[in-house]
Length: 274
Image (cartoon, rainbow, N blue to C red; front, side, top):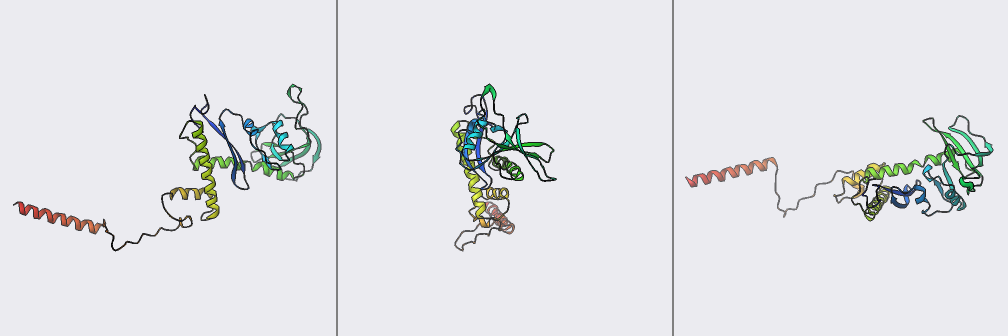
């Protein structure tokens, strides 16, 4: 999302870091930074809800942050890099003829660079899944009890936030910023999220169309009309004319009558002049 350089010196961009709840279908937290701020840096400043499930991608690859979530009783679902070692201590059975290739319990590397201990040293789990393109994903979780299918389904739901960002950019037109200062960018993004929440609340209260996208377009097309949302799909009634009101008729018959009157007045003027 392009913005001016005054917000991010030398970098024309901004990032909106959002915690999104796919069950409630709404964002829960927003943090706006310059485009050159790493995702994990912003994540470490976000509030942690104890016991919640956090699903994220490789941009948040930090064992220290994972350990913080684990200590808070959170369930973690993310991906392992292809070159990350995993010491297996238990192999679990996987369903036959499914996309689940393996389900293993084990440990992440105990030692990191510069001989540092890995803070995420407890038993964890790796579920390998083959997706539609044939690519194999190494899904990581600290949940040792849920089924492999449930873990794979949780990671797949991560695409809900990708669809949310696409919806915001296309419908709320946030791909271009009106101001270039940090405050202007924050205000515009915040207003867009408020509009998103209001549209979702209105859609839940008025199920006149099934798709939230179609509902948003319907609202945008009727912004200047003072009508009930429940009646937007109905043909609007023409207002009744009051008898005392002056009526200007512009129908074809009225236009022809006006032309005849003008022609008659023009002939009278000519005769008077003669």
